[in-house]
Amino acid sequence: MIYDYDVVVIGAGPIGGYLSRKLSENGHSVLLIEEHAEIGRPFQCAGLVNPGAMSKVNLENTALTRIWGARLHSPSGTSIEIGDPGITRTWSVCRKLFDEQVIIQSVKSGTDLWLSSNPLSAEIKKDCVDLLISYNGTERKVRTKLLCGADGAHSWVRRNFKMGRPKEMMIGLQIEVTGYKSEEGRLELFTGNNISPGFFSWAIPSGETTRIGVWSKPQLLGDKSCEYFLEQLMNNSPWKERFSECKEVGRFCGPVPSGILKKPMIERVALFGDAAGICKPTTGGGIGPGFKQVDILVPLLTKAIIDNDLSKSKMTKMALSLNEMKRNHRRKKALRDAFLTEVSEDELDVIFDIWSRPEVIELINEIGDIENPIPLGMKMLKDVPEFRKYAKKAAMAILWG
Ligand SMILES: Cc1cc2nc3c(=O)[nH]c(=O)nc-3n(C[C@H](O)[C@H](O)[C@H](O)COP(=O)(O)OP(=O)(O)OC[C@H]3O[C@@H](n4cnc5c(N)ncnc54)[C@H](O)[C@@H]3O)c2cc1C
Image 1 (cartoon, helix red, strand yellow):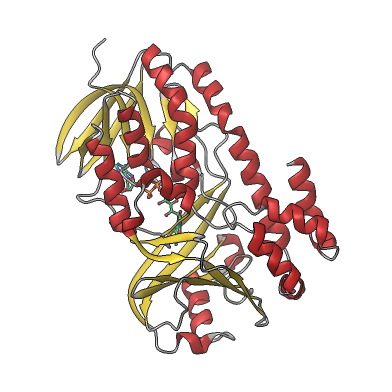
Image 2 (spheres, rainbow, N blue to C red):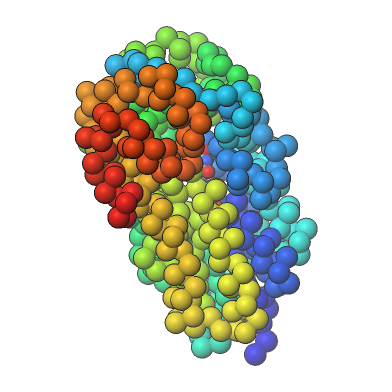
């Protein structure tokens, strides 16, 4: 059988770009398909890339601000400052530049990129996947060994092959403003049911501007929208003064799919990144976990592509290697629910009072990592007696999840 490509990847976002680069570097022929005419537009992202993910692509040059600290606000206005200017916690990047550079790395490693293109049909056969692709307005047939969907939260590949839905689909709204009074390198998180039910709002320094956003679950919004809660934050909250001179220069809205699919891999088809529901339940971050998923699966897929064994049983077996990530997600969600989503504002205020104690702040600074809150959660359960009653559910999930 003659193949046009070993692998076709749908979606030239950061995960499709990183995936296609890794596959090309391993010697496979790869075609990357993007429906837009340019990379990185439109984007829906607060632009935070953690140091672990950044080290995989070395794109610090796309960063607008190095983030070293955070100021967390309780519903009634208690503030906690954490961080150390000497330690980089995360990077606030220009997503357009970041995505472009990830794709350039992929093309340099040998990937073919088709812009203004999208799949029209895909059929799994015994030894291949046959695709019909709209390429700049013309139809092209492409035969491949493996089809990868890295085509975002509303993945065409996932829907076409009826591969299920992520467990949670949060919604985020963000505006980019000038005139916010922030401290260089310190992001802010705001909590409270009248500004971000069950979740938090943020203000993230990004060079000359600040990204201000809200995220939550649709079922917690009631009959209100994210716009309503963002308005509340900026005009009717204990922090409204900070926003008084803000001028909006951009607005983005998008879904945050979280809860890895039960079956992200079927015969000759695999889903990656948002398409597979990989975003973190605690932060909504999808770039770090998406890169991690690629690093876990590409070595396994490489052998399978060479052997051309991408059968249902082989793919199901490979998908088991994501179980640790799934378990980790479940634990993080349990922590989030116990400390944030399923507590009342009064309970949240009490939690903040405990967090604001110097010895607890010291603990947070020492081992706190918003990307990986489990070690801190465990330590707090052990060392801070008052946490035990609030964290009963979380403790169960951490221990048994
Ligand atoms: C408000 C908000 C803030 C966020 N903040 C952060 C953050 O700070 N840090 C972080 O890590 N994550 C954040 N996220 C999540 C992050 O944006 C995503 O997890 C990340 O972009 C996922 O990358 P991806 O490559 O899987 O998908 P995407 O970035 O969605 O890329 C998918 C690509 O596929 C293309 N595509 C889609 N369908 C087709 C098709 N049929 N044919 C061809 N091409 C197609 C799209 O055009 C797009 O280029 C945020 C999300 C939201 C909504």
